[in-house]
Length: 65
Image (cartoon, rainbow, N blue to C red):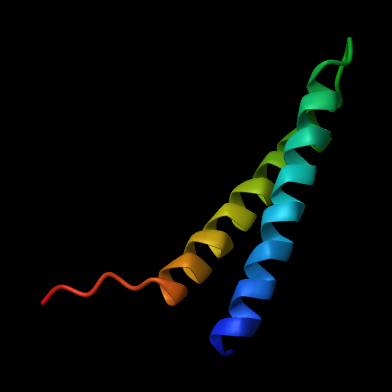
């Protein structure tokens, strides 16, 4: 994956992450939220965060000179 593709993928993951956050917030505001669904959404959000960080590290590696 080149830098351009990585940046496009990163942008898509950031949008998906924000959408999941909104979904989690909306579900949490319900009177009796489905805890299993809430847990699955949170797990998916964490997985996305890991993928986002991986792409960011690819694009901006820490180089210790």
